Image 1 (tube, rainbow, N blue to C red):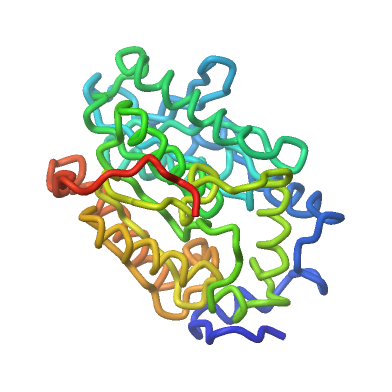
Image 2 (cartoon, rainbow, N blue to C red):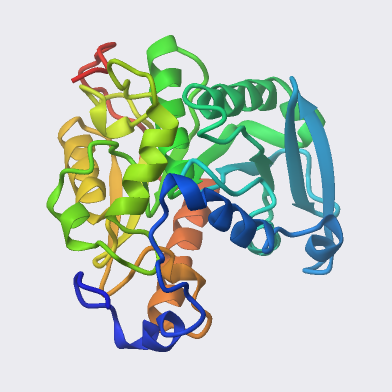
Length: 326
């Protein structure tokens, strides 16, 4: 039985079916999450069936990068570089690819999704390095990929947000080309698992305290100190990040780290747009027919639409810091 904060009534039926008796992820059953996510990967054929889109694969310096874009798109389109989730131990760049194709069609953008190595076989910095490599290749290959490098938004969902946030910090610190916007969707940002919401949700059916500890331990194993590039909540300063969109549900284990990150970024003069969705559990946006989920998806699309049209506020000047360890 779920012991955490109340979940919106419209999600109750979704949460009542087809979950294992022992839902928590421990090292011995990581394969279960991998199998469940792999079963939902989108093939190129399935993505093309969404609409009139072109699907192609590119070797981004050894990283498989999938590109999805509407047919006949202008060569100076905006771009969404999207990092997949999966608790740092599961998933792939085909996760959610159909939904990204729908977004590409509605907004007229190029969507790029990199694959990356998974923990525990490949702990930090493997996933970070893979996405950093793919991002660097993407920026240098904007003409080939058909987008305007000045209109690129970086997005990560759940564990993908840990990587996307860490990448944005790295780009800031190295003076490399920053994305025009950073989107953190139900983000996994803090390996310490010590904020109140991480204690509220245990023995859960989506992503609970035990699962969170398993995923982070797999990723940061062997590190004496965990850097902000691995767990962005550990960054000493968030000044200099691009305009940032954060979405979280009120019944998500990641609630408090998302709210804290948004507050800290705002204090560091980063333009932040924060959405806290009532009764939303981790992954609530996948529930078909939910008014709350539909509102969340519209908010994302609205933010991206404003970014594409140049309506997102420019990055403000803030204090800088190269120290990323607490």
